[in-house]
Length: 258
Ligand code: ARG
Image (cartoon, rainbow, N blue to C red; front, top):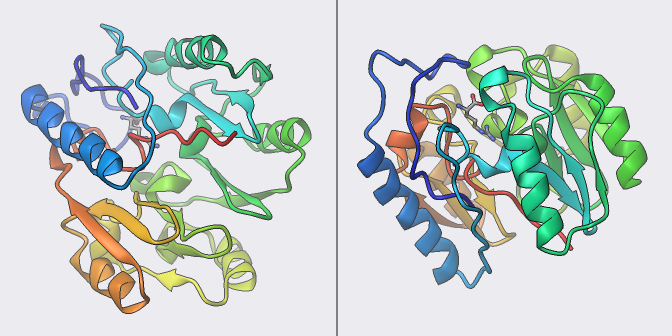
């Protein structure tokens, strides 16, 4: 994770961002501190990367890389504003023992567009990550990568529209995906939890599930009820200030899979 010490909304690279409104950094830090505390409370080990002045979106650690089986597929950002984040995350990972790395030839925004399940990696495209990166990741990581087409600019990364429920099921908002990709998701996950527009609109799909607990935006009340009914334990958090940049709990979290 990366504490939002330089967080700001000074440019707009997704429809959630409005530089005229901006964001309150002190509030963002307080909300992020609560997310960090929630992970520690759950017993998860959390490592921190130093934030860098001039990279206001660096708090969104999910975009920094994709780490599977201890191997690191580096990020290469679509927008120049975030360009320096890829090398910064790669440098941190190398310095912290992840030396099996690939500097990507193709545009990809790390775990924002690659979600790892037991058998497959679900990969988004349409707004940020190039399909050539899906193949590049598959070849490097030796895991099958399933390409899914995103169609709504508010859900510009796959992690804004879908999250894994453990290793073999998912929760998603169908409206973010093309008709063909919706069919693929129905085929792969007949038992998926389906979210509605109201929960998607508060970035309720940008959640983190460890198989039992689900760290999720508190405003996603319908989804929180549904997840409880299905036997999961929701942990609702207020990350409204970070949503002004288009991010939620998952965006702030890069998983280091050894
Ligand atoms: N402002 C950031 C961007 O548009 C938000 C990134 C959110 N991260 C994520 N994993 N969805 O790039």
